[in-house]
Image 1: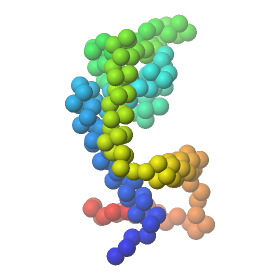
Image 2: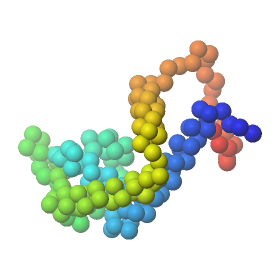
Image 3: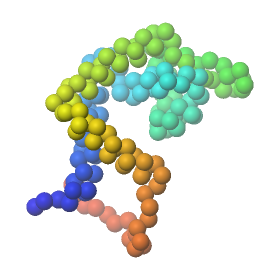
Length: 163
């Protein structure tokens, strides 16, 4: 039985994302960090001086989860909290020199992971895939238009069912 292409693409995106996250988790652990910590360090490198609430929103994390991550990174002397000159109650997040070095070193790992996963795929396929993913993200970012017919109430999908 052949699945409709659009439904199959959604399924494959979800499954590939899950497998890629697992692979990156494993490779991050081999390098003494976690994918979550790596994400925090990389985001801070791009935008140092964020407060925790803003960073949590950017990373789509619950503030309490981010607080634990920051506590861990701070105890490892990779991140520091500094007083906000505009609000003495607030703290802003900055990389330490060790944190900056680690995230810079992880760039080589990111390149290695990309090579491991994508080396056998030609440039044309990669370009097409990137354009398709950009279109999907754009539709999701701007809201998928409602279908003409009223959407049925959410129905329960049996466990183990694929899209």
